[in-house]
Amino acid sequence: PRIYSDDDNIENMAKDVDIIMHGHPTTLFEEVDPYRITSEPSSAPSATPSSEPSNSPTADPSSNPSTSPTISSAPSTLEPTRRPTMQPTFSVASVPNNPKPGYFNYDPSSPYGPNYWRNIDIDQSNPGFFHEEFDLNEGSRIFNDCGSGDKQSPIDLCTKPRGICTETHEMRPKPGDYKMSGNLIEKQILPSMLRLVMEPRTGEEPDPPQIDFSSNGRGITDMTNIDFKFPSEHSICGHKLDGEMQYYTFHPMRKRFVAVAFFLDATEGNPRNNHLQEVIDAFTVEFVNNKQKCEAKHQGLAGSFVGGRGLEMINKTTEDLEFHELFHDDNEQWNSTLQSNRRLASSWHPFDPEVQKSVHFWGYSGSLTEPPCTKNSVDWKVMDVPTPISPKQLQQFKHLLFNHVDGNCKRTSVHNSEGSVARPTQPASRYYKCTRAEYVSDEERLVCGDQGCVIPFGAGLNPYYAPLVHVTGPPTRRPSSK
Image (cartoon, rainbow, N blue to C red; front, side, top):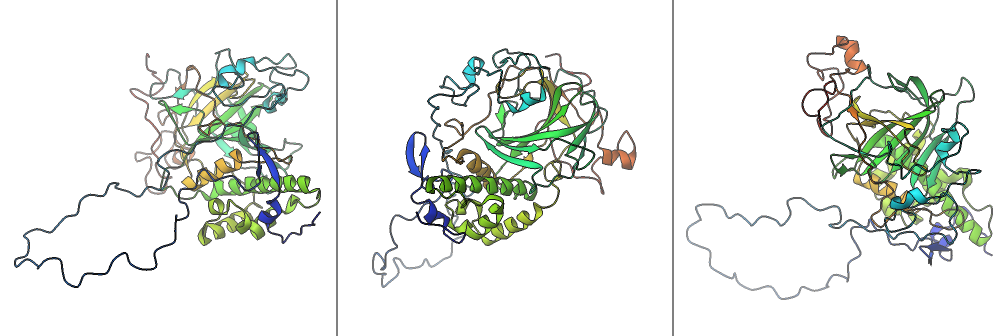
């Protein structure tokens, strides 16, 4: 076999690499990008004009000017359309011939889809569920709670909370010492999500990210993982957003998770979120590494994949990758990516100002959002202002998840035909909403005291970002009767 060097063109390396996509063999870079909006012109432009120009004007000019200017008819669209008029559809991944216990997907018509998760078998000797490693059942049998209907997640959150917010101050995060480029944050491209796994604490240093909660979190807890889901799992008044980041922390004494959820909003015109681009870049390294492992396995070149030099290989060969247009389409984007790559060596703050825009949230007691859907195991805190990302960044996130190929050249994603890895919302649980009536931000408290400032977002304070919706009627200390 031909021996490839680091300088080889990745596309040439992959020409003869077959992978199995939805039951059919295809080449590694053959898949059509579902997000591509424009295409090549159908033919070359004509070399000559279609007709000769006329030698004289079509009509004599009028002798008198008109009394008012001529106004052209309104355009058919008021703004340019940047997204396709129809959302792209996604091929549903085929079910394995012999699914392992615990296999599930998001196809509503599949016997392994959300409507049938209650039937999923659990291998008690090897459950294979990440969150069950924290012994939520304290050594007892693991039950499948997906069909219980008891305190399940996600739910729809809206304007009439029935619970009471008992928080006394904003959640107080600490960034910790973990670097996005280091081994203490593991980047996982899983069938149902993108996941960052924090190495558990082994001593006083280094510290993982931490959060100090004022009430049901019971003090400072270490962050265990961050999950990225598309679209959002929770909804606001029946509306789902483009994505959702879920920050899990675990309280070992209470045997409960506290999860902080940030909606992702990719509204047209949103600027690039540089802080989250660091996450995208880190997952891109994993994505390319796994493609290289696939190529090495197919070619019998065990040492040809990039390994720890993935970032260098992306920089050297990105123009040879088929997803070049999506990830590096212009010099500005490319230069920003190089800057982001250099920042991967510094500690990464999950609550950077580009991520967190508010200190208030909806809260309730619920479950894990995937099998075994362990009931009443998570205290959810869903932030009321979304994290903005650009439309391109949303496409990048989805590309990394939905088009991922593992080291065995198999597509891994279990998304449905609508491009979703989000569990449908469950019957509503009793939830509450924390607002400024319960507590003001620590910044405002420092400047003006516990009651806050007369002008809460005045000069020198953080800017105001409107929540997705406002609760109606009195504050949550007097919940709605409905």
